[in-house]
Length: 393
Image 1 (cartoon, rainbow, N blue to C red):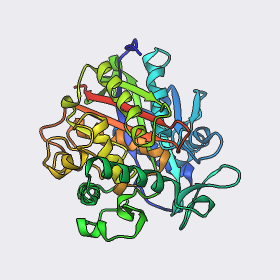
Image 2: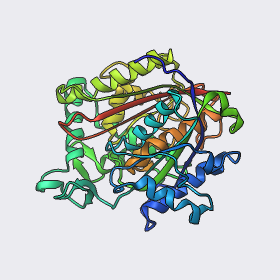
Image 3: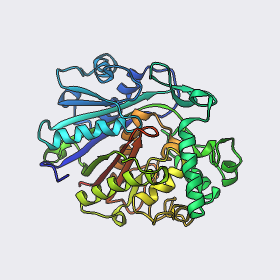
């Protein structure tokens, strides 16, 4: 995949707090849009030329339903005749909507495109009802067995432990780091501090994963406004440039290798397009749906050697004060995981880091950032996204 024809920037970001609440999914989406508009007062909703909406369980034409309510909720007309499309790709739904918005502008079709991602999930584990609709259930997973996602990643944790000597304490360190970052993030679902012992002694979900090693379901919205780079500073003094935008699927590799292979391919292609390497990434967001996933993503992104993820966190590299800060908003484990909103929330965090006003601001202010988001289910190919951003000011 070669370079696109036009450079693209992020000029505005918004998100809601991630937490379970009674608000409708439409209101949550509008709230995220309002927050993004507050981020760029020079831009009006009528300046938006296209809308891409990401959600897994939001129902038909969610983007149109959200935009139809902006007039009475925020006083700006959203249904102005612009194209509105809807994107479903499991946990990457929002990032795939962002990808579509990026390519729209890069191809010269529109100059300003908005991505909005939103999800409203109940408490419990993800499941699907008889009709195939996304739902949540308490207790065991579908079919009466172990929950599918914890089982899949639990088996990866077992294999990683047996092959490389990774310890349960290393998994626990991911959760402790996550809560330490989330502590000062007002949008995070869980902010209470944890110790390694707290994590290890929590309820077992699927051995060796305890409850605190798993991300929670959540409700929330996020919004990213993209713009052609040549006009970005008309709206935003600190635009963030998008250097690479990559999406991959798996190739049917064995389970442990499937935790690396498509992520490695996505990250290496993104590095090549952006003209950088893993050593150039100053701050990153990786898809920490489970603690073992984060450890393996350190390896997939090239931040450490394969099998060395446990040592990487033990040495403090991704932690506060470390040289490779990762998931500085608490990540999915503490911030929460409303599937359609997750990708936009990751971008929200990185944009603020690159602007220099993050809740857990990395210093010196980062120059280059990486976003990684993946989603899907066992045996169906999944989706793997890697985007690279840089300060554009």
